[in-house]
Length: 96
Ligand SMILES: O=C(O)C[C@H]1C=CC(=O)O1
Image (tube, rainbow, N blue to C red):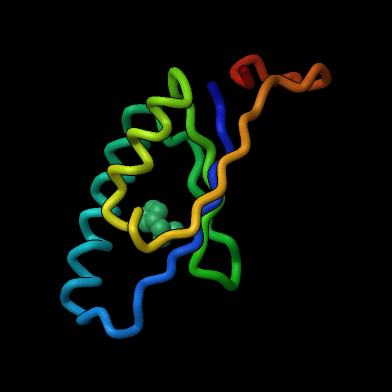
């Protein structure tokens, strides 16, 4: 199942820089692992914002919830999820 996920990062201003840097490093490693596994199919920066638009390819809502809630930045992001399905006019076979 495909999901569009939008994440806006809101790290508290009083978080020590080294704590924020550690969280971001762990977030990057986890995000790259999920991309290598094909579960995090697209990751785009929203120009001008500390936010991203992503496409996840997971088995079901439960897997999406598990992956997202394990993100190290999860406590510091506003997240919205939109389920997707194949468009009848799409020529891309992998859009499912
Ligand atoms: O920077 C972000 O958009 C938040 C998050 C998503 C992937 C990652 O490495 O950090």
